[in-house]
Length: 162
Image (cartoon, rainbow, N blue to C red; front, side, top):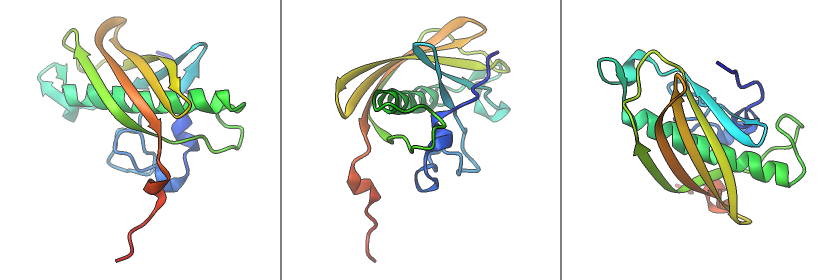
């Protein structure tokens, strides 16, 4: 299985790298990593035993999380590239949040198999991107999803005064 060498999530500042799905700072999280693969984006993930729905199959919530974080990461890559940058060039990429998430489970997803999420990105507004994702296990299409991702609002940066 391919390996993601340069992931957009590796470039997020520590302040915004805490997502349960893709945050490198979250010790308990999944640590999804999304990279560029030609004209598409890709995330490889090997679900752990505890991500089981029932013996032999992956819990659908993990697959939905994979599609969610793959979508926001893919949007970040696309906008970063549109702005003339590449992953790892020292420029912090834009951070996206999910506006909507839609998932279709097509086949049961087997446990003990690395999953590959493959995405195509479509700009629908300068601050809003749609990402179509397919999740494969052993080259079998198990799930398909769509994320509408928006540039993280500046209000996310504000801290409450208590």
